[in-house]
Length: 204
Image 1 (tube, helix red, strand yellow):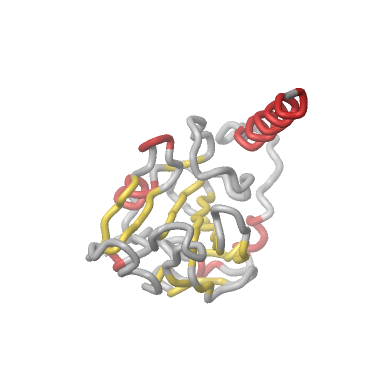
Image 2 (cartoon, one colour; image 1 turned 30 degrees about the vertical axis):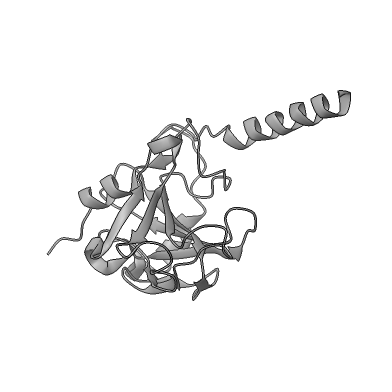
C-alpha cells in the first residue's frame, strides 16, 4: 500500500507539471525575441496569408468535427470523415497555413506521429501560431521544411489501431509548448482551432 500511495503522488505531481503552462503576457516589454523571427526573416514568402482547414481542403468538405475544442476539456478538434470508423484512414492531411515545420516525429503513447508547424501571423493578436497534427499514419515532411497553405503534409491515422482513424488538430498561440496530454481545463496558450480558422480565412 505505501508503494501505491507513493506512485499516485508521483503521477499527479507529473501531471501538474505537464499542465503548468503560463506563457508570457502578450506584448510584455523586455521579452526575449522569438527564435522564429530570424528564421522567417530569411523566408518571407512563407509568412501566413490566411488559414484553411486541414482536411477536405479548403473547407473541410466531407468531414466533421467529432470532438470540438473544450468538449470534455479537449484541447483541439478531432476531424473524422463522414463515412465513420476507419473510412478516412490514409486520407490527406494539409497544412492550415504557410509555415515552418518545427517537429515531425513519432512521440509514442497516445500521440503517435505528430507534426508541428509554426506560422508567422501578421495582423493577428499573436505574432506566431503553431498548428499540431496528431495520430498521422504517414508524415510527408520533416523538421526544417517550409510549407505553403494546403500542402499535403501527411495522412490520417489511428495510432496503430489505438483509435478509429481521425486527425487531432491543435492550434497554439505559444509555439513550442510542452506536448501536453491533449485534454486539460487549463487552456493557456491554446486556441479554438475551428473558431480561429473561420476568423482568419485567406482574402480573395
